[in-house]
Each structure stands twice: as structure tokens, then as C-alpha cells.
Image 1 (tube, rainbow, N blue to C red):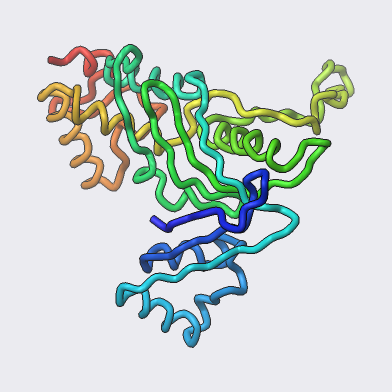
Image 2 (image 1 turned 120 degrees about the horizontal axis):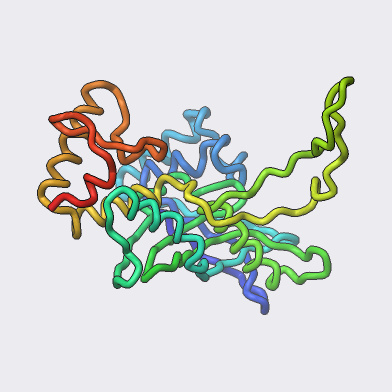
Length: 271
């Protein structure tokens, strides 16, 4: 993973962002214009005269460091956690599929291998996300500025938390108009007073990376031999048919076995 640091720090902790690229994959991620606008104009992947020498240098074991300097919107490194409520929908989903409840156990799961390139966005860079004993802990780099009377260093952790809540939860949709009544002439609407107001993400099972990580953790430490056998069969069948395994489909109520489909309840009770 690329090495990120805040340098030339101000008193409030904000500063310039230093990004050190160590692999060709990181080079592709950071310098592809459509992926991360921060680096547009630094290296153009379509310009072979620029890109090939840099790629060859990294292939030979060197690295490349880019510093994003800014005076208005300084970079901040935020380390914090989300409340258990944002993890609960995922734990409930795992219990529905497998019968196992992680609540009450001690465990730790590194989610970054599951997130992949989704950790790097044009608005922020996520460098660590772990589940530790029912909470989500994160490290994120983002820019902040004075907003609505809130100073940049005060706004940064708020913005970081909102970003992560949206990443693992769901922001509810608010319609612009509400149906009032139905008449012979048609439907009457009125403007929704909540439309246009700031909405905050709510706990919801929307991040497939977290689902996959929890299932893998359960599979390694708690699945019975019979459950592992069925999972292997279901996965092999899905690959042969060009489908997705049953556990990756949130809307299905059963899983494939050599003898047909069985419900998640029956699967959970297998010894």
C-alpha cells in the first residue's frame, strides 16, 4: 500500500500530503485521471514518454513520492471509530446466514484487503479499516476548510465520520414532492419540507466488502465441516454456471447443495 504522511504541519495538525508510490498497481490507481483528480496533470498515463520511465523505475525497485501542497484546504489525518450500531446490520446478516452471532466474542478483522481500490476516492484516502470487538476503526486522510463557523481542524473529524458512515451505511432518499391526495383529476402533490436539507447516513448493510470479510472470518474459525462442504459445492456450481455464490446474494433465502436447495435456517443448524 502507498505510504501517506502529513508534512509541513500547521499548529492545528493540517498540512501538505506526501504520497509514496511503491508498486505498479499503486501507480495505476493514483495516476489514472478518472480515479483520483488530485494527481491530474502530474503524470499522464497516456503519455508514454512520461509514464514508461516512471513505471520502469518502480519495477526496478525504486519509489516515487508526490507532495500535494495546498494553503486553503489543508490535509488532515483522522483516526477514529464508528459506533457499534453501524456494524450491527452486518452481524445480523451473518447470523441469518450461518446462525452464528459475533456479539459477545473477541475478534479482529482487517477489512482493507476486501476494500481494494475503493479505499482511494477523489474526496478522501482510506488507509486503515478494522473491525475490533464490534466497532469499526478507521484511518483516513482528507482535506478540510472553515465551514459554517467551524474551523478546519474541528471540521475534519466530523467530515471523516460522515464519510465513513456513508461508506458503511446508507443515506436515506428524500423525495422532492409528497403525495397529498388522489382526485378524479389526478394526484395532488406538495413540496417536501425536508427536501434539500442535509441527510445523514443510517446503519445499513450496503458494503459488500464487510459482508465478505465477516463471512470469511466465520468460515475459517466457526464453520462446521458440513457447512464448509456445502459452501465449496455452492461456489463451484456458481463458477461453472457463471453465477454468484449464494452467500453473496443478499436477497436469496436458500443455498445450493448436491441434493438441492436448503434454507438458511437448515444450513445454520448443520453440525
